[in-house]
Amino acid sequence: MTLSLSGVSRAFGGVRALDDATFTVAAGEVHGLIGPNGAGKTTLLNLISGLLQPTGGKIELDGRRIDRLPPHRIAGLGVARTYQNIRLFAGLSAADNVIVGQHLRRRASFWRRLLLLPSARREEAQARAGAEATLERVGMRERARSPAFSLSYGEQRRIEIARALAAQPRLLLLDEPTAGMNPPEAAAVARLVREVAREGRAVLLIEHNVRLVMELCDRITVLNFGKVIARGTPLEVANDPAVIAAYLGEGE
Amino acid sequence: MDLLLAYEGLFAFVGINGLLALSVYATLSCGQLSLANAGFMAIGAYTGALITLHSPGVPFLLVLLAAAAMPAVVAVPLGLPVLRLRGVFLAIATVGFGEVVRLVFVNWDYTNGALGLVAIPQRTKLWTIWLALAVALYLLGRLRGSRAGYALEAIREDETAASTMGIKTTAHKLLMLVLGAALAGLAGGLEAHYTFMVAPGGYAFGRVVDMLVQAVVGGTAAFFGPVVGAAFLTVLPELLREAGARLGFSPGPFRLFLNGAILLAVILYLPNGLVSLPRRLRRRRLA
Image (tube, rainbow over all chains, first blue to last red; front, side):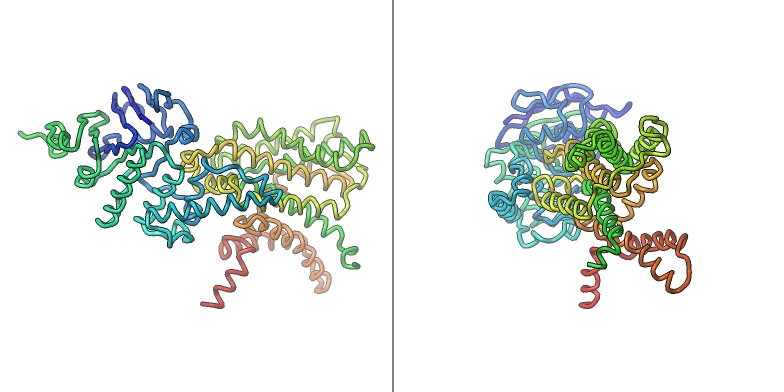
């Protein structure tokens, strides 16, 4: 699985939210996307998941162009994501959220349910067991029956990650997965992300916690004002003068 | 048995209104406020009535299937453009559709204009209505918990997030619009063959408001809620009439006032409808 962006741009009226972005993410890699607020990071995730269309350039998944496909088709190619401003199905329980995440892997069950076939019930039991196992991975199994809206911010983020993992994606997009979490919770998420990458999935994550990014990511792309200003290993990026200037400002 | 005979009409309308409330619930269950159902009902009623009047030999089951199928077919080209609209814009567009349907029937000589079709044989029996309602309830009940049922709930909660889970949001919304249209058409066909007549005036905007109020009062969190609401609001005026006759007042305009007051009370104090009442009471007793 390789995600490659070449010359991807997105303009909102006169504002170039993303300008000529080029980089690749490979299977098994944790790729960090960092940059100051408003740098175009979330816009980039929205472009990849099909919620926005680029105004220029192309996005490819294993050589196949995906930048004109609707979101559900892109999800069908193995892309799952979380959102910066959590978008859980608030009225559903934690487990039901995860079951919705399994949508693409489940067989349609309505007709079999209509005929009261036992296979439908087996499949449901399987889906529920699968959801509980996924919740276990994010440490939320005991909250499986709680409505999503009743959970704390950090817990909701973990449910969102579980919902994305339930699709068994080849590419996982995480938008600030540890925002609002305390250090132990964030460390648990980091461990999980490493584990997910070890399974051969590609992970592209936006993160503001610099220490976490440096420890977690194999490679990092730095955005500023919609442009890629640096790319490389955490060490290379940390010592890049353009990155230092973007974060700390230019010296006189 | 006497009760059944004395109130057969009432029981019939409980069933028909139950079907209509379910037809509105179909789209509400995936978060879409579509108000085209009076129009769909009219199409179903006229389709059924015209078949019966022109070829009386057609079995009633086929007549009813046609009454359900015709609006379902119409719902597809209507749904494809209007389901792109959200919230109040969808409501406005679908109200427009309902009015267009009504005005077509008002101005169409073939359907006898504003006077409508009369002397339709009474082919609907009480059991036909209740069987249709039972089938509709079973269908919607089994839909919940299926993969499609989960997809519908996801769309209702957050359409954007649902689409990035791989759910075909437009297809699911269209399917529910078509199902709602079929249920409304079926109810229309049943009613036409029960009341002997169809006329455009019976399918005005007020009719879809009735359906919506019944669905909301009953509660749309449970699939049977709309039927509870329809039963309650259909029986209520009869009770009022009884009470009025005993106490010597005429309920006439008072009925509308009470309907409004009940709707307001339910929205304010029972946002999940009448079906949430037992749980509410239990919780209060425990507290």
